[in-house]
Amino acid sequence: MDLLDDEQVQRIHDASMDIIEEVGVEFRCDDAIGMWRAAGADIDGVTVRIDREHLMSLVGTAPSSYTMVARDPAHTVTVGDGRTIFTPSYGAPYVLDLDGVRRPATLQDFRDFTKLNHLSPALHMSGGVVCEPMDVPVPKRHLYMTESLLKYSSKPFMGAVTSMDRAEDSLHMAGIVFGQDFVRETTVMTCLANANTPLVWDKTMLDSVRVFAAANQATLFSPFVLGGASTPASTVGAVIQVNIEALTGVAFSQLVRTGAPALYGQWLSTVSMRTGAPQAGTPEICHMNLLTAQMARHYNLPSRCSGSCTSSKMVDAQAGYEAARNMYGVLMAGTNFVLSTTGYLESAMCQSYAKWVLDSEQLELMYQLGSGVSFDDLDEVLDSMRSVPAGGHHLGTEHTLANFQTAFSMPEMMNSDNYEQWLADGSQSAEERAAARCRQMLDEYEEPALDDHVREELDDYVARRDAELPDLVT
Image (cartoon, rainbow, N blue to C red; front, top):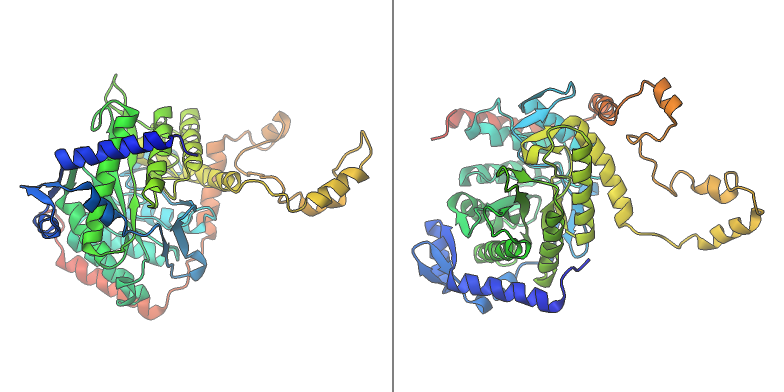
């Protein structure tokens, strides 16, 4: 769905180019400044001003789609060019566990969510920071997260971006599984780079971009937008700022390696002017998702946004309303890469096991909604209608018997029984049903095959790097 007409798209583009040329964007990294200076940009300290034609020529070298190769070819997936993929949530330091207790996330939680992500038919990736394993020291945390993503799932994954060394560790560990030469030419992961809105790309993100783009890995250039706080209190103003930051990030990746996959992304939330807290489920976020996806199409770039987001602290009506409204808007926007689709609570501070199950099933329904309707069996349908007399029923017809399992969605977590049957079955809430289903999934999980020598090399690398790295951030 395009919310803007051609004139409005051009106004956003022109306003963005004006700010880039007049105000500029800070690139707080000496190496990045050197690259921009060599490319002919106007440099003033760390501020970079780029001529609009030059910027657009760089953006134009990024591909409109790319393929992430999985270690199981059945999970290889293409991003962009009209396709939408669903990916897990990212970065929560807390979990709401299966007993309903909110607590700091652990490495076991990370592994369990990776297993669940592997099992979900609706998720196209195993994840990135599916939760923060708070029981592992920060300098070593990326090793165990990347190892888990590679071991417990055969889907594509996301690399570590919190330092250049951690990005290089992720790339090397991927090379152990895929081959070192292979991962320096072939995209196997998509990595996140958040701009510090307003108008800053910092050294940490730029260093990671230099590692991953140089190896032809994809980067999500995602301004971290708090509407009304880090952007103007304006939907269009927030989108203009996203446009500036996303395009300058994409352009930088093309300085690193022409043709490296790059996504026009964003993480959006409005801010409550009563409390200052992020709000995850307002209609303005749907507007912004629609607008940013349309702008990405205007530049022929794949787009990224977030999905089943909520500010709720519980798996309750608010969580359901906000997640559903966000995901519906995302689907209508035609966004290509949808992050944070499962388990998301508290504006990304908490990851819920039960909500993961409920969200995962909702993704299957969203997939069905996005697939549209089919006329393929219309002749058989009309024959069936001719065979049933007025006042009859279709329950036993040949067409119904052949199609009843696939014609309509039949979600398991959304109870449709009458009250008496629901009462007889234990009168469980959706959260209780989801928790039970989650336990069952983890009990039945089977680890995807990985060659013994690959597993041993991964374990040896993690052990060696663990011994080399400090326990404290320096």
